[in-house]
Image (cartoon, one colour):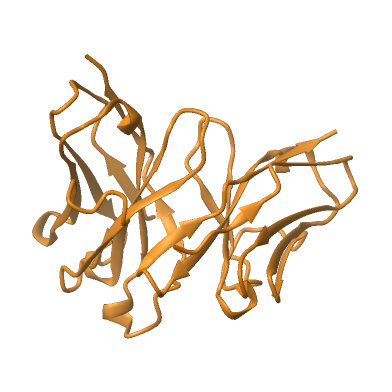
Length: 108
Length: 126
């Protein structure tokens, strides 16, 4: 089945930029969704269809997807952005959803 | 506002079955399918399966096919996940999540999980 690969951890200082990548074979042809999960909480959608933000998600969050890599970018990182982030793709070959392994974002 | 409220924590012995419920409110039930996702302690998210609340169609993760059954009761706006022949590695937090139903909206399958339940801890231990 389809495999999504995420870097286990990313860190950024407050005010700087954090980039979270999600690798997959020709992932640029797929629609990628991103979820944020803070400790003790359920995941929350922060980006869908590669680059669309749900209502309530700050404009500091943006997404892109091309080739073999999808990227979630957090500009002007804040302490409240510290969380685990997961990418997600629908694998039409096996008719199942696939999640990446998750990336822990640490705000220094 | 939309809410998905799940049933309480369960402790089961290996080989037993568990059934977790997910009651939806704040939207028309048949417009969103119910997905189930689990998270083992300290681990990432694993998709279990989904059911269309519109026509009952199901899709399951390959590694759980045969042990899991998803159902809905549209009159109660509730989805259910039953997992059988439990093993210790089934110990996890189980979430339900609602996504726009591709059959209802006649859309593609990539609809994101807009709403999540609070999670149900299932512990499998002898």
